[in-house]
Image (cartoon, rainbow, N blue to C red; front, side, top):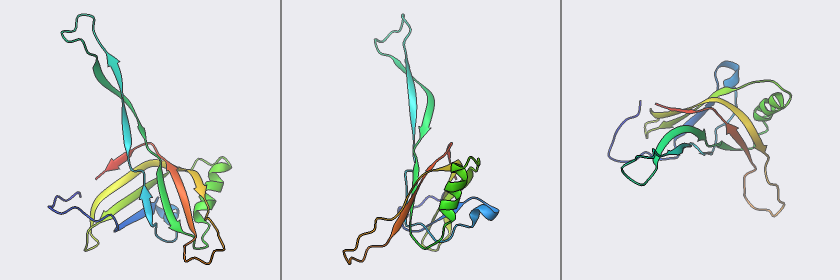
Length: 149
């Protein structure tokens, strides 16, 4: 699905799906998706008879960055209900899919988070200053890997 082209894609045109079937019933879009990444860990190893006086770097485990989703508070409790079920001991991992779209709204890249689960929910910051800010909620997810297509 990843399509090669000369100009990079804009970061403003994407969709987010929080699972399939009933799990995908999340209302509203997300204004921000951040934290799509991972980091490879390496072990250092050197034989006593190595030709060069440096260690080799051998890849081993890797860790995944937490992914953060932000959206305007719309009165829907779907995210909070998922967090509540997990907090009460229900094992409810989901496949979260972030799909980047081109200018014609056609999919060009897909990031799938395997076994994503809620880690932290942050409610909106409320201030009576009379400003025009939007009340935002934030959901931080942990996951077991990113598949790219």
